[in-house]
Structure formats: structure tokens, C-alpha cells
Length: 428
Ligand code: UD1
Picture (cartoon, rainbow, N blue to C red):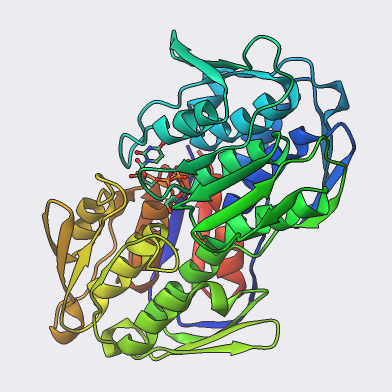
């Protein structure tokens, strides 16, 4: 298993290219299943999760080619097996995004239940509830969701759907299913993440009638068929946010090319309050920092977009660990998303957890510092927080099990090395 070896203490300077968003590319690969015409996606990141999604759709009989420049060409005209098997779904929950497109285009789908994952139980009841409201008959048997249209139906029927909570992939799945349904679908309590808007733009380019994306009410007027398109995947705001925290912690001056400051308001506000300079510049974001121990720790609560993203909680916590003062961080989206805490503590961080709240005492105002150690990545964003801590810890930090990091960060260590970090991959 690969590891990362980081020697802390170097400031970061230069430019980083922000990749396409994982959480937009994954639903968009599934959206290509909605048409028999070729679809081209540009700016698709090189990630393990993207490879898994390509494997999943190829397994259905879809032709998908990936070029090294981030272009993916998909031709779903030969799709003959509308199924997502457990072996693939278990490694990536986002596989559940195949359900809506398959059901909408073929009138049937068999998709494995994703099961639990490290950060929480993450059920898909809202996906099922929404598809059922559009008329699908869904049974859960032997760990699979088996969905089909009622006898005599050729299409799903539009419906008004209010999900019990705001769900990102739930909104995406239902929005995709509704594009080919008969009549109007209204999604209330919809997620507003930029990745939802990016997916909606792609679907519109395929001929879908959608309005209200980016708000909590999305209206979709179903059409009989969708056509092919070429779509560029939006920049990854979580990757950009991770680099913002890395530069804030290590100190330095970096431009994040293609980064979208307007997608990171909540994170950027907190960074500015901490004492980091962040500016939207043409074609990117510029971040300047004197380093973590000059900054002031910031409390926050994770919420749905446009609030503070749960996917940035661990990375900002790493920054708080080395800043001055105390901060309280509340995780409201997932029940078990503090697994990085024990590992950060191994590096010398002072953190107390009580349920969904973590209290961090930054070591910046004391004489103590983080000191390098061997730590273990437990999930994708937790891994990123350990890398950030390693960049400022004294001596050597080894981050083990970085396959988690490879699931969602495109060449992270190469990008960090490019701006001056002392970091290398050790391949076992
Ligand atoms: C997506 C993102 C993930 C991010 C999360 C929250 C993708 C591929 N993944 O995950 O990176 O951390 O949004 O911003 O885009 N829930 C239910 N029933 C459901 C659906 C969700 O109870 O049917 C609950 C979940 O357990 C969780 C909350 O709702 O507590 C939000 O989950 P959701 O927005 O669905 O997360 P994902 O879409 O899986």
C-alpha cells in the first residue's frame, strides 16, 4: 500500500492547477447513460473514483474511452445490462447515481445498496422515495434495489417530491430521472451545490428542460429523448479549498488556477477571519499566509451548500490545530466524521470530541508544535487533513493508506511538490 512521506516546515509558492470536480464528474458520467448518442466530457479528473465509475458503466455494455488530457468519450448506445453490482458499488457509493438514468431510459435498473461507509450509515431511502413518487416499482432484495416501471408504462411520470433532508446525490439522481419522465417534476428541498448546477447545465446541453438549479426548488419538464453533448466539468471546489488550507497552514503565496472563489464563500470567509489573505483573481484564487501559528483558530458548523462544506471540515480542523486560540467545530451532516482527530492527536494536536462537536486548542499560542509521526488515512478528506498537518509538523510524517486520497485528489503530491512542499510517495 502506498504511503506519503512529508518533511514539514516549507512554505508554499507558485501556481497549482485545480482539476475538474470529482462530485460533478461522477454524476455526469452517469448522465451519459441517458442517451444513445455520444457524450464527451472535458476536464475529467484522474481519480480512482472516476476509474471505478468507468468500470461500472463499461460493465453495462457502454463504450467509454479516457484520454490523458482529461477527455472522456462515452457511447451508451450498446448498453445492455442496466445493473450496478455490489463489487463496484461497495467501493464507491456514488455508483447509486446510475439508478435514475437507467430507470428513466430503460424502464428498469438493478443497483446494489451501497451499505455503510466509514463516515456514517448514509442510507439511500430518499432516492427510492423519489423514484417511487415518479411511479417506479422498487423492491429491495438480497442487498439490491430492483426497480422497474409498472406494467404498460413506457416512461416515469413527473411528480412533486420533497426529500426529508437535503441530499446531494439524491437530488442528482431524481433530477436525471425526471429529464425523461412524462410531465413536470418539482424537487423541493433540493441541494444547491455547484455540482448540481453543473450537472443541470450538462443535461440542458443534452436537451433537458430544467430550471431553478442552484436553488432549493428545481423544476424539470420531461422530454422524450436526450441527445449527445460536450460538457466541461466544473473546477473542484473541495480540491481548491484543500490547497487554500494547505497554504494557510504552511505559509506562502500561491495562485490556484481555475479555482472558483464564488463556490467557496463560507471557507474563504473563515480563512480571512483567521488572518489569511484570499483574493479572487482572473482565472483563479490567490492565497497568501504567514503560516498557521500566526493565524487565529476559527469555529464553524458544517451545513449544506452554501454553508461550510462537510468535505472541508477535516482540512480546516488541521489548520485550527496549529493556529492560536480555541475553536469549536460542529459536524452536522455525517455522524462519524471525526476519524482524523485521533491521527491529528498523534501529531501533537489538542482536540476533545464530544459527539458531533470537536473543541480544538491551537498549539500556535504555546511553545508546543505538531511533531511528525506515522499516521493512517481513514477516509478521503481525513487523509487530506493529515497531509496538511504533515506540511507544518516538525520532522517526518508518514501518511499510510493513501488509497483514500487517490480516490478523490488528482496528483496531490505532485501538485504540492510543484509549489515547494517536501513530499514523496513511497510505493510498497
Ligand atoms: C455528497 C458528496 C459528498 C459530500 C456529501 C455532503 C458526491 C458524490 N458526494 O454525498 O462528497 O460529503 O454530499 O455534502 O457528491 N441521507 C439519508 N437518506 C438519503 C440520502 C441522504 O438519510 O437517501 C443523509 C445522509 O446519511 C447524510 C445526509 O443525508 O447524513 C446528506 O447526505 P447526501 O447529501 O446524500 O450525501 P451524498 O450525496 O452521499
